[in-house]
Length: 306
Image (cartoon, rainbow, N blue to C red; front, side, top):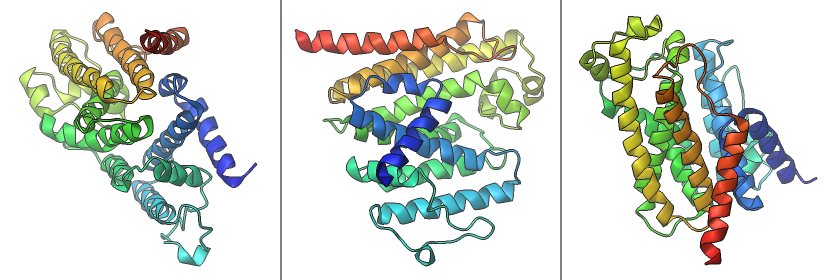
């Protein structure tokens, strides 16, 4: 097996092991684009892990992210060259991460689908924001964070899937925002225990629900009113994301449909549980995710058979 194939296989295994929602949507893609999505997911997973490892200090996490950034920059500049160790940027304590097994696949994915490098660096910037408690005063602040950790990923995705209209770009950002807001609402309790509150201060003040109440997992009428507002706002971004489908090339339509169905299903489940995101993790059954993927593929075939 060639080195590039070994790298893609590493990404596939990582995706299979950790992408509990996204990997089901990947099944709708042709093999070459599915392989690229595994590499994109691996990049995001690795970046997040370097910034979110509770077993190491914040400063070491920052050092790791910097080494990762420099190594990504090096390999994107020379995706098919075997750079010597002395040619690579090194960071104190970590050194270079150029030999990370996912990097060759990541570089190949970026080059093959002409993905602007700044999208990947934006993701690293977003993860760095989490190294210290975020101050999210307004929804505009939250949008900025979500662009970096999710909107930029959405832009990467449409390059892999293929799109034929520039109107796809802002809608891809909106799609990333919809999915990230869903994650935020699902993980409110878990994030609060880590000192992370992503709900804007202006929303907490408006609905008279305090950070202390969130830390204590208070599930009262004020919380439910707050959550109803947040779910409705998130739903509006799903409506925008629906418009993206028309601007995608054929391979991208089923995967986006599946992503929207799965994450939209999580949002509906949050509401069905009357916004109780504290007692147990909100999730969908595996069979349901597979059903969403299968339905999207069938719809695609029926549409193009007409």
